Amino acid sequence: MTRWLGDRELQAWVRLIAMTELLPGALEQQLKRDSDLSHFEYYVMAMLSEAPERTLRMTTLAARANATLSRLSHVVTRLEGRGFVERVPCPGDKRATNAVLTEAGWATVVAAAPGHVENVRETVLDALTDEQVDQLSAIAGAILTRLDPDGVMTAPYERARVEE
Amino acid sequence: MTRWLGDRELQAWVRLIAMTELLPGALEQQLKRDSDLSHFEYYVMAMLSEAPERTLRMTTLAARANATLSRLSHVVTRLEGRGFVERVPCPGDKRATNAVLTEAGWATVVAAAPGHVENVRETVLDALTDEQVDQLSAIAGAILTRLDPDGVMTAPYERARVEE
DNA sequence: TCGTCGTGGTTGTCGCTTCAACTAAACCAG
DNA sequence: CTGGTTTAGTTGAAGCGACAACCACGACGA
Image (cartoon, rainbow over all chains, first blue to last red; front, side, top):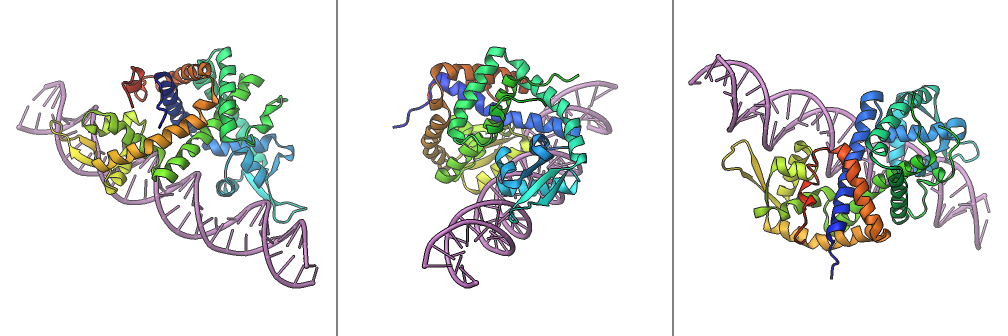
C-alpha cells in the first residue's frame, strides 16, 4: 500500500522539483552570457583554483565536482582545447592524470567569480533570511546523507574556508 | 566590490548545488529502471493525467512542466511513438495542438506512480522532520519567487489538492 | 616472473536538450 | 480585405552527458 503525499508534503515536493529544474538554468545562463562557461566548467575550474598547485587528480576532481570520470574527461578535453586546463601525467602513478589550471584558466575563473557569486546572492541567498539559510543548510545536508552518504562532494567545504 | 560568501552561506550554497546536481539523477535512475521513463516524461504524463479529459494544450503543458515548447514537442513526439500520448488538433484554434494521454499512457503513469512516490519519500521527505518539510516549502517558495516570478510551474498546486 | 585482477582514464556512440529557423494561423490597423 | 505582427508549434543541426567498450598500468599471489 502506497503512502501518498499529504498537502504540505506535496507542496514542498513540487516546489523542490521546480527549484531543481529552474536553478541550473539560471546559473547556466548567467555564466554562459558573461563568461562563456557552463556551470560545470566553472565548477571544475573553481575546484582546481582552490587546490594546491592548482592541480588535482582526475578521479579526485571528478568526486569534487560530483561527475563521472567520463564526463570530466570530456570536459577537460574541451577546456584543454581552450587553453584553460592542462593534462599532466602523474609522476608516481603512470595510470593517473593530473589536471592543472593554466594561467589563462585562472584568469578566467577569477574574472567569472564575482558575477557568479552576485547571481547566487540575487537568486538564492538574498531571497532568504539568515535563519532560512541555516535551515536550508541543514535540510540539504540531511537529503545529501541519503543521496551521497560518503559526502564526497561536499567534504572539502565542511571545514572552515580560509578565503576565496 | 563583490560581497563574498560567508562560511554559513557558502555551506548552504555548496550543499544546495550538490543536492540539485544529485537529486535529478536519483529520480531518473529509479524511474528509468522501474518504468523506463525519464523524470520529465513521467512529469509530463502526470500533468496530463490530472488534467480534465487528460488533455492539455501544448503551451499549457509546457508551462506546467516548466519546459520550452521545443523540448516538449520532441518529448511528445517520442511519447506518441510509444503510444502514450496523442496529438489532437485543437478545435477552435487551428494553430494549437492538444496533447491527450492515451489509455496505455494512463496505465503507465498509474503503474509508475507508487514507486516514484516511494522513492521521493525515501530520498527526501523521510530525511526531514515535519518542521523541516514546511521550512523547505517556504525556502523553495522564496527562491522560486526569484526564479519564476509568475509561478507558472507551481500554480496548479498552490490550491489544496483533492487526491492523487 | 608470470598470470590475473583491480584501478585510472579515454574514446565512440547514442539519446536528449537547446537554439535558430521556419510554417501556419490569428489578430489588428487602416 | 490587405499587410504586418504576434502566437502556436514543429523541425534540423549542434553540443553535451551517459553508457559501455576499451587500453594501460599496478598489485598481488603462486
